[in-house]
Image (spheres, rainbow, N blue to C red):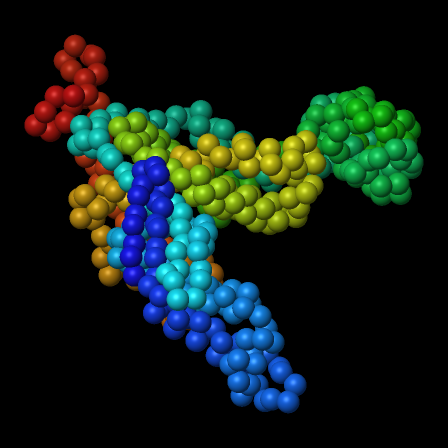
Length: 434
């Protein structure tokens, strides 16, 4: 077999493949045998018809088509092995010539794993994000906890204000309205942004027993009756509230618990910010040409992730697109930059891991598989078998390798602020000045 390869772009290759006549003849024989087992010819059992009769019965074109199906995939796989390229997608194959007694020629065009050229990652410097938690942050956390334990109280004959909740019964709907059905009751927060703005603003100042009609932006009208007006009441900040809401004995203990939690969350956010700064610096010095097919595939992943997230909230993708007033093509266009950045990040970290010889240990892999099993609430042995059989173990390894690369990059790049005697902050690293 003869293989000629050329690069059309850094991440796209064209393979011109030629199979010798003897390989073509063998393919024809295999094709005839395959067809003989599938085709029923009157007077003969399957697989027993003479070849000459079979050729007349199915025609040369069908035999050639079957031979191509048998020959080309195997020849393409062999050509890939011989050429040493690394495809990332299925090839586009065009058969150029196929005649009995002559070579079979075809051209395969395929996108490749992109070449990645990194800059000097060891020169990257990232100022560590300061973690500061104040008493005001703890006060805000307590207010958030009180808000989550609030209850609604009827206001009687008081008028609804912004932030109040109005229980309405829809009596009539005219026109196309997705959010309301006649005869149904709805609890609407005034100014909450959950329902059409025209409807929510129309409830400002409403009292129990009020009847009204609102015209929406679409031109549809909604007629309603106010059943009740409610206001959210926050619980008093007492030791009893601390016990009920958080399982601690005193308000002081509640503040300390929330301080610890807020500190951990702030540290996590700071870590993520530092990681993103390091990755952005790595990408700024990298050269990566992404094939369009790879970006398309990643966009599809992002769409699927969004659909799954929406589904968990009881929202369909169709409904989401309606609310956002966009088509699926527009959504894909919007997601494309995020897909490109995610791919560039993965490829850059993969290359950094390769250059630095970073690989997850067996202990790290075992721990990650245990985490997967715990998340899926499945037996560990079954999850390990499922990962191996479905080729997903490679995904786990790749994820861990990228984490190690990111940790290595951040450890190399981070620098802490150091206060000088003059009160100005200097940035330094051990053994060098930044």
